[in-house]
Each structure stands twice: as C-alpha cells, then as structure tokens.
Amino acid sequence: MKDHETLSERLAEQGISRRAFLKFCTALASLMALPPESAAAMAQALAKSLRPSVIWLSFQECTGCTESLTRSYTPTLESLIFDMISLDYHHTLQAASGFAAEKSREDAMKNFYGKYLLVVDGSIPINGGGVYSTIAGRTNLDLLQETAKGAAAIIAVGTCSSFGGIPNARPNPTGAVAVSDIVRDKPIVNISGCPPIPSVITGVLAHYLTFGTLPDLDDLNRPRSYYGTTIHDRCYRRPFYDQGKFAKTFDDEGAKNGWCLFELGCKGPTTHNACATTKWNGGTSFPIESGHGCLGCSEPHFWDAGSFYTPLSAPVVNIEATTLGAAIAGAGVAVAMSSLDRNKIHRAQQAHEIMSVKDL
Amino acid sequence: MNQHALLFFLRGQGLKFAVIVFTFGLIYRLLHPVLLGRKKNLAAPRGGEWGPGMRTIWHRSLFPVRLTPRGHFIIIAGYIFHLGFLITLLFLSQHIELVKNTFGIYWPALPPGAISIAAVLSIAALAALFVHRITDPVKRLISDFQDYLVWVLTLLPLLTGLALDMAADYQRMLIVHIISVELLLIAIPFTKLAHMLTTFSSRWYNGAIAGYKGVKA
Image 1 (cartoon, rainbow over the protein chains, first blue to last red):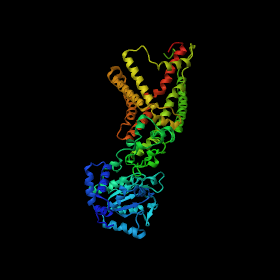
Image 2 (tube, each protein chain N blue to C red):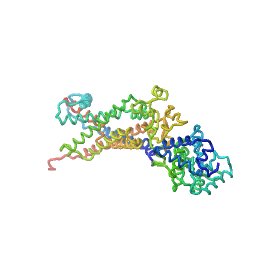
Image 3 (spheres, rainbow over the protein chains, first blue to last red):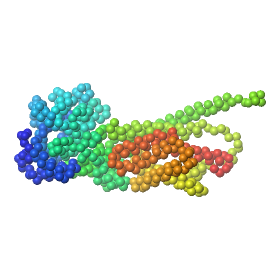
Image 4 (spheres, rainbow over the protein chains, first blue to last red):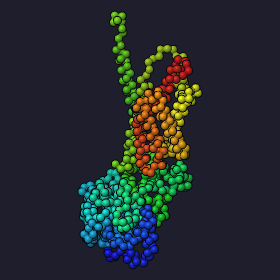
C-alpha cells in the first residue's frame, strides 16, 4: 500500500462504498458521544487525511490487546483502522523480521519524525536496567525512550501499558511500570482494559485524524467518551441492584433470574469502561451478561485489589483474627490496669493517718 | 495514591487499624471499671443485684410514660435516630455481606427502599436534635466540643451511605463513606459514643444498687 494514498482512494480500491464509510463514521461519532454533525466532518476529514505512520511497540504483554483488535468480528470497524493508518512496525502483524523489521521502525522514525503515532502495549520492566524484556538485544525501556522522542502522541493500549497491569502485580519482580511512568513530555492516551475494547482504539485514532487532537481525557488519561461512566451505571442488571435482588451463588435462583452480581464480587461500580454499552464480539454481550461479575480490568492495580469474588463492601483482609486479638488485648490491659489502679487505691488508703485530738 | 489504591487501603489496613482501636478501646472501657471493683457494702442486702440490674437495662429501654412535651420530643427523636441507625447498619445487604465475609454469619436483608427510609428518618432526627441542642439555652450551655464532634461523626456515615447510589462517582463516595465509618470506629472508645456498650453496664449498676437496697430502680 502506498503511504501517500488517502483513505478515500484506498477504500475505493477495496470497493467500499461511500455510504458504508459514512455509516462507519456515524457509528464512531456516536460511540464517542460527538454531536451528529461531526459524523460528516469526520468522514470528510478521514477521507482526505493522509495515513499517518504508526509504530506499535509490544513490551511485557500477552498479545491479547492485538488479538482483541484484529480478531474482533467482520466486517469490522476495526479492520478499517488498517486503512486509516500506515502501520510501519508491529511484531505480530509485520511480515519482516530481524534486521529488516528494526530497519522499518528506524525508517519510519526518521521519515516521520515528530509526526508518527506511537502505540504501546505491555508494561516496561525497569529492574536490573530493564533486562527482563528485550527486543533485538535492546531493552524495552531503551526502545521506548528512543521511539517516544519523535512521536506526536502516544497511545497506551491495554492496562499493562496504561497502568502496569498484571506484570506490575505484587511482588512485581521485573519492576514493571506504565508508559506514563517513563515518558512525561508527550501527550499520552491510556486505552485501558485487559484487553481494551477494539472500537475504543479505532475511535481514538479517528478522533486524532479528524480533529488533529486527542480526545477529552479523564484524570487517568482515558478518553472520557468511553471511560466517563462506570459499568454499574450502564449495566442492564442495575434495576436488580436498586431493588436489592442479588445472586448469592453462581447457580442459585437469583443467578438464573439474572439478578445483580454485586455480592459475587462484581467490580462494576468502581470500573470505568464502555463494556456495558459497546459490548464485545460484535455487540454480542459483555462479561456480566454471561453471568460473571466485572473484574475491573480497566482500572489501575485491578489484580491486587483483593479477590475477584469479594464484594466491594467487604474487607480485603481478614479482620476476624484481628478483632479477636484486639478484644483479648483490651481485656488483658484492662485486667493489668485495674490491678495497678486497685493497688494505687490501696496504697492511698494505707497512707491515711488517723487524726487525733492532739493534731487539732 | 490513586483512588483505587486508597480504596484498597481503606478496605484493608485502614479498616484493620480502625477495628483494632475500636475493639481494644471499647473492651478496655467496659472492663476497667468493672474490674476495679467497688467498696464493700457493709449494709445487709435487702434484695438481689443481678435480677434488678437486668430489669433496669430492659426498663430504661422502654418509652417512659410521664414526660413533658419537650421530654417527649427528645425521647422520640432519640428512638428514631437509634432505630434508623441500627436498621441501616444491620439490615443493608452490603453491610451483611461485610459481616458474612468476616465472621461467616448472616441474616436476611431488608429492601434498599426500607433502608433508605430508615436512614432518612435517622438523619432527620439527628438534625432535629441538633436544632434542639443549639436553641435550648440549658442544652447549649452544657454542650461542649465533643457533643458537636460526635454528632458530625455519627451523621457522616448515614449521609455518605445514602448518597452512595446517587453519587456521580460511586468510587469516590464509597471512599468517603468508608473513611467516615472508620473515623467513627476510631472515635467511639474515646468519646461519649462508648455508651453503645457502657450504657448497659451503667444501667445494670443502677438497678443493682437499688436491688441491693430493696427499692425499685
């Protein structure tokens, strides 16, 4: 594919009609909560835009994020992403290997310095100088620092690159950190999730191509249009929560009736993501619809936030022994102190002197 | 520290600390005066101590009939506050889950609507008692900083709990709610709030003294 081709030329080559493209833009604009007029503006801007160079670096990760993006459903909004961008470097998807692969990254960096988008999935290990994950003999840390220098913006795809994710879970032997812990002088968008929803990645790219800016972000640098509400807010089981109808086990009557999974540990109330509205597998369902509570995978430290099956209102540590210990200690100290105080009273009584007439 | 880390701390070590202070302090406050003992009563007993003591605990929980209108107001508002607070504390399913996950025991929950009504009534009673405290000259004179502090500490868990499902940010409100509860737990042994246990021991003592003398408490 020629890099200077516009998207409309590329789509025409593939036989994709303008109507289908407009539908794609309308869906994206609607997903991103943009006003209806912006669908046309988006279509116009995208059609004219030159495909920006994208360098995709995969670090300490499981490839789930790439799987999520590429193996969603067809025909996909996500498949169009590869028509909108020029993916110049991606381990899993590129044909080149070895020196040729690294050269394509270096070429893209040189040719589009200051203009290319850097997508990162996976966390970056920094312990031991970053030796726990290397590519072509170079540490992830080194590669990220070098590639980030010429990037226009960085998109951290997945919870690992956004917040450290599973490699960052205690005791974090590799010292895994997020992109934002290392790169501080570039705009970063965190598209968290384990994996993230594919259309969120597409949406952010489309927004960048249309408006030349990154979308409005929340305090964790996630696009507000997707992470603005919680799973709980948009959950179809929310009415059961409000009525106090909870499944107590995964196979009781409540579970069969589709009642709220709060008591089975659902983290929906504290998880910001678009799963409940965008859904997965072509809009088929999302985890709660399949009968399992939300794990909170798009939030920082979700792996270390206690058991997935502990309700949010319950403690994450065992306080039974603590309570018993504190009660015994309290009783013990009360016995000791009351004994001391009794002695004090006794000594004070002993010290009393009997007054005689002589004293008067 | 981000919100998630803070929530994790509050559900973990923060709660542990609050529970240690609460349990240790309350047991100490209850047992210390009991173990200190009393001066030997040399008078011949005219009745038992245990029976009248227990009866007094029960009697003083009942509604006293002969009261002035002001007395009625204080007693009724007091009842509404305490009952509303206890219903909210003990019968909200999320609270029962906490006990179930900690001690393994549980009981049926009340519907959230009933809990909300109990919490609102409890808050209204607290507000009415506050107005009474600052408008009644005698009450105002005998109130000190601690009276206002415990009022705030008691009100906050009710307010933040009620606001939880209405809040734009559930997690932030949950954090505030748990902080308010943990502050209350820590404050109880050091303040008048220790009456949650000592009220029973002192009632018993009053009844026991009367019983020993052979009079009605």
